[in-house]
Amino acid sequence: MHLPTFLWLWRIAAWSMGFTLVAYVILGISGGWMFWLRQQRRSRPDWVRPFHFLMGAVLCGLVLVLLAIGIVGTLGHFGSLGHSVHLYAGLGVVDLVFVSAWSAVQIGSQRPWARWVHLGSNGILLIGLIWVTVTGWDVVQKYLP
Image 1 (cartoon, helix red, strand yellow):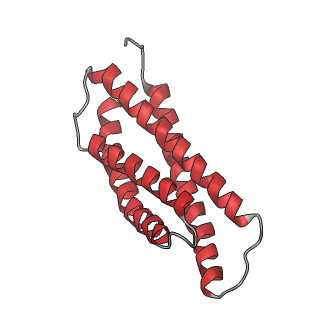
Image 2 (cartoon, helix red, strand yellow):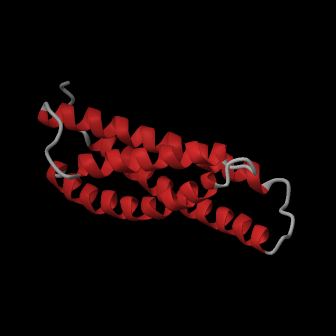
């Protein structure tokens, strides 16, 4: 792929990563609120769970956008993948996001384990997001003139 500059791609990636982090924080707040209400044996507002699911879907979409940008940008610039640990950090984050999404739709009275898989994968996802942010910053420095 021959493009005059990849700066436009990195801008999309930067905005997508920023929105990903915001979505993660919003999910943490809404999920924490639902968890707290559950522990207090209080009912939650009807809009919270659908909102949480919607934000989770947004997070999934953003992660897929970031994956596509990473693949296209790296192949376009270097011609191959695997030039840094950022690839593995990114793939780990993609996996964790989709484990979290899968476990979210499994949560129910018949599958009590799903809630703990969901919470655990989101806890590990925090570490993954930090790792992918740090390694991504290093990668972006290679592309800037």
